[in-house]
Image (tube, rainbow, N blue to C red; front, top):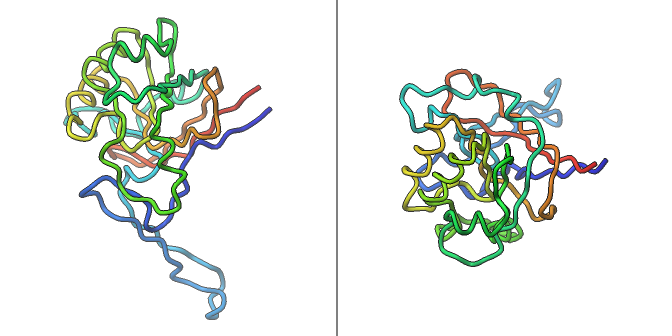
Length: 211
C-alpha cells in the first residue's frame, strides 16, 4: 500500500486568497525558556492551504463543515489529468480527460500543481479553474466531491457561479491539493476537515491510498 500525502504544508508566508487572513504560527511557551512543554498558537483563515468548502461558504442556509457526510469524504476517487493549457476547464475539457458517468469523487490534476514546486509561494491569479459550464457538467454526472490543485475550484474572477452551482447541488469542494506526486488513476481518498462547528470551511489533511 502506497500513501500519497496530497496536502500542502501549512507554514507562515504561504500563498492565501487575496483578502483572506494571513497565517501566523508561533510558539508561545518554550521549553528553552523554562516552560513545561512547547505550546504553539495558530492564527489563519479556514480556507488556508488544503481545505474543504462547505455549502455555507456561499449559501446562507447551507450546511456547515461539521455536518458534511464522511461517506463522501472517504472512498474511491478518480484523479484525471487536465494537461492542456486552456484558460478554463469546461465540459469539453472534462469529457476529453475521461470524466464520465459513474465517477463519485473527482480530483483534477492541472498545471496548477507546478505552483507548489516553487520555493517562494505567492498567489497566482492565472490558475486553471472550472467554469460554470464545467460545474454544470459535474452536477449532471452526479459527482459528490470535486477537488482541484489550487486555492479555488473556480477561475479567479468567476468564483461565484461555479461555487454556487456545485454547493447548491450538495457537492463537496476540495481545494488546495498538491497532485505533483500522483498520476491519473483510481485511488482511495481520505479527506478529513477539522471539525469546526458552524464554519464555512476547514483545513484538511488529505491522502490518496494506492493499493
